[in-house]
Image (cartoon, rainbow, N blue to C red; front, side, top):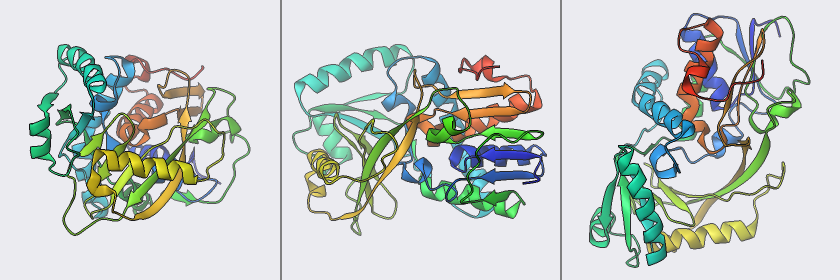
Length: 347
């Protein structure tokens, strides 16, 4: 590899950084992946952009996710213009539902601090939920709607980023294992769950997530992304419905298990009985890169080595802001990673 900039890891984070660096004038960029570009966690994701539905506190991670979410309308529009690929940014909104009194009480506690933090959240009664989504279970108790929590088709996003690289002369090197960090060139490690194959820190471990896709109908059964206590469902534009996801600390085992698939189908049917009759069209698993504290580690490891890892459940959501922050750090821009309150890599 003779490229001046080498990005090790070809998921959505690495590809977004490659694009951002190229847009700022960098040339001679290579993205290297141990397998197929974009085929690991980025391909396995559900594409949810849900900083509000998934947040637990008004903390650094929430603020980072919120800032990245705000970039998505322009990010999607630019990629469409650059590549002709629509990443299907769906701004219908997200519902978080309670199906009993205990779950409703937990949502009420969340509602109080979110309202005080200025988050756009709408409290919904059973009747209001069923009006929005007639196919929701009649046992629904109450819920919230987050109008600013969206989704994208993550596989189309990966495809668009790959095409940007191909159009603009960014070298894509697949099925190539990098055993050590190359010297003498700028290197950005974006290897996700495999970060520690190249860097001793930060400590990253894989967390398996299994998912299923239900075959759709001509008329959409659901329109919002919907969370319950046990699962979430993501309706796609083509009628498919994604259901996820398990959270399993099983090392690098990426197998799909019959038990998990059955549990996901049952949990989806509890959200909407209409889903019970749909066939499972696809099942898969991905390995999320987890670091302690669940906040990504971004920054400079040494003079010419940078890292962007530990995005865990938020890799798709955080891709645009991660790319901008790493590019800012490389070019010495006035806005630095440390200004965002994100953990920096060891100096």
